[in-house]
Image 1: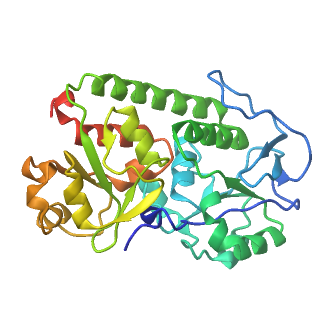
Image 2: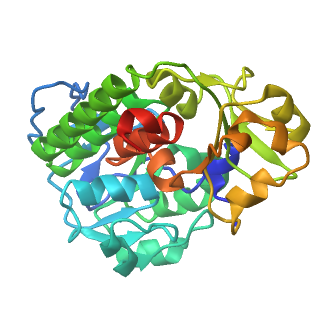
Length: 320
């Protein structure tokens, strides 16, 4: 089953605003500057934050019960040390292992009744789910359950901001600052290592298998990763592009990165595509599968995802 993010065209869950009844969040108007800073940003409650849809949401205190509607949200919340507070998660949540033990609330089609029955003090939804889940989210709002819509981060800086904002909302600012600091350190380490690469490589990245092969082009998260490690994207088009195998052959990339795992033996399958035996990446055994969760989820492990992509492109600078 293809991951929703893989085609870059589909959302993976939910998103919301906030009704003011009961719980820890209301629609009061006290504002706060939630711009990420290197120093710890204090979360003195009550605190008002603006979510991805421009809704001002006031947290009266750190929430004691939380529902997460997106795998990246869940990884952030666990990273902040909120495993006990989490009462419901998305069906696709698989990290950390403790997430598998949490009550599931559905995926793209989430179970409104179950979420309402949990009566969480806050629901962390996601901007990417607005197009498909608005009706259900409105029902949750109507039930008086506060919802914070997390921004669909488009780059590392927005990911850092997301982590810090969730940290503020949950009273975990110091933990959020530490996560961001560690991520930045890892990114700097990876960038420094790949700067030593002698030859800049051309990379083709695919997020789904034939016959509908999709690839990230300009202004995508993967483009940012390739730029950071000094590699060239074989695709110059904007956004997510469906591409024919013949066009990949013509581009003749030095490396092919596979960002999905739903096809058994996909590396060998890619190599056996018609005409691919002439591609440099195939001839030099540089077709590499990366962990789709590490490289696509905008959470604490994203810096590790950058490192995995860097190792796929420049294994020599990592001693591999």
